[in-house]
Length: 189
Image (cartoon, rainbow, N blue to C red; front, side):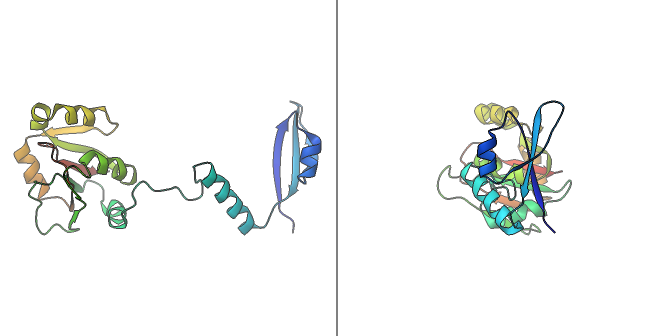
C-alpha cells in the first residue's frame, strides 16, 4: 500500500514541484494548492529529517540535551517531586550518605560555577523552586540578582537552615564556584 506525503502552497512553482515528484490533488477555495507524492520509506524519511534538522541547528526527533554529563543527566531523571538536590560551591560541607551520592564536577576555581550547572541542569529536571541563603543577598548581590532574574522561583533561608536542609537532600553536585553563600538547593517538581 502506497503511503503519501502532502504539501500545501499558495502561488506554487508548478514546474519545480512537478520535477520533485509532486502531483496536484486539488485547489482549495482559499487558493491553496494541495499536492501529493509517494512518501519515501520510513527509514529514509527519518534520516533525511534528522539531517535537515541537524544542519538547521535543531533536532525535532531527538532534542539535543544541554546536559552532556551522563551521571548528571541520570541524576536529573531520578530527583522526584519535593526531593531536594544541592548544587554547592567548592567549600560547602557536602553531607555524607546521601541516597544518590555526591557528584564532584569541579575542575578549577570557578569552573564550573553554580549558574553554569543550573543552566544545564534545570531544563532537564522538573522543579518547583530553588532555595538560596539569605546571606547571599548581602555578600554576593550580583549572584542573588542573577537568581532573581531567572524563571525559577527563589525561596530564601538562613545559611544555617540551608546547611540543615542539605542533609535531607537526595544528592549533591559540587562545583568549583567560589562565590560566598552561592549554594543552592533545587526542590523537585
